[in-house]
Length: 404
Image (cartoon, rainbow, N blue to C red; front, side, top):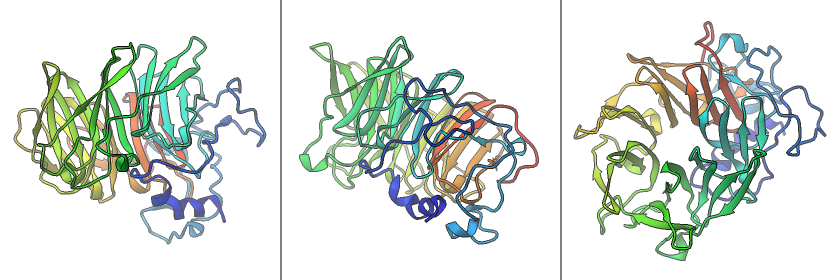
């Protein structure tokens, strides 16, 4: 069976965000130049490099028909476009097509971190991607860094990690104390993402149980022994149902947004020793899986079936926004109010220029397009996208001639 056929049959199984345990080997990391199969993959291996202008296609493992594609199917790439004609280009040799990267975060153009299958952690240092894995078989679903030599990553309630970056740029990972949960029967639902305000204030959100009234937000606090303690937060009123929280973003102590299943959204602010949550009507019952803001007056969320919403800190509800897709959306990021990106299922990439949302393009291999899970950039001309079996990069102004 070709790699693309395997990818097509496992799109929804291998990396559904509700799953936390995957029995797969670590993500393959190799040189982006045409490396031999037995290339040194250790920490001292030559780092891979991006090849945004490469004209030779990545081996797709077969024709579009191999992945069940038919002519005109928008989920499929009938031909591989040249990188020079598209907005995003695949980075070669970094991701095994069978596995996935699920989250990405960076502090600068030369300091970017991506996580995914089987404890995979990759670091971009401005020259290439290098492996910095966590010793776990769990899939990591969120990553955030303090910019002070520490990283945080999450998978399940019992598998969340803090990484200390050493002088040689390697990472020493330690397992955090288990997150407090009401019962041992609820240990397996996955965390959804990690976000932080400061090195000693990191938030983990997630959970898949539905209709059970307990919290799905945990916040790190300084422990009495110098370690990490957990503060359990309740965005829902006790005794009501609390759908899982899927994403979090904030710009100030009194301007933090959380979104989740069944369209549930909250605006939060810090209080003395706690957090106050205010529910905001989203005008949808679709699950919202991404949130990002340009300012207090312009906050965006996106989710299933191409749902996009816009809000402000003072608005009583989110405003529906039309976008040219019905695909599930999974990631949002922008450099400004007039430069915003959304990514999602079957290679969906959307761009907002301050006036309207349009489809963007990528040089996907032929066959079924991969699901895209997250996006981050250091600026308008340096943007990374991660997904199922792929890592995409935008390293310059918008291209012309490419089709999504």
